[in-house]
Image (cartoon, rainbow, N blue to C red; front, side, top):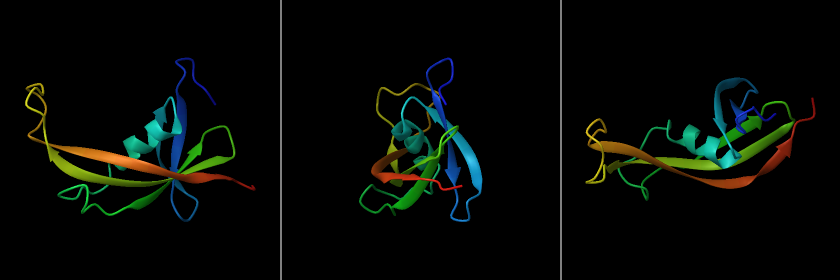
Amino acid sequence: MVREDGKRNFALREDDGSESSVYSGNTPRQAALKAARRLDPANSESAADKTELKLREKGTDKVHIYEGWAWEETAPDNSPDWMPEEITEANVSKQGIKHLEE
């Protein structure tokens, strides 16, 4: 379901079917990146553990499945004053789409 501003809402699904958080974005990938940034970050991208993220698009029966990982990185030199020294970076890889049969 698309909002007036063009963004869509995606609920993060747990393995038991419950939905713990809602992320918004213009695309499912944008919402998945937001969800991945909340994972426990590793020291580097290569050391990061990959976690399956299932995002159900609100108002539909589509569940977008991603593999996500996060890591800590030093903030860029030109970062604003309010930004911390260490920031969390994330990446995702789409695994597919499933349709709910409810």
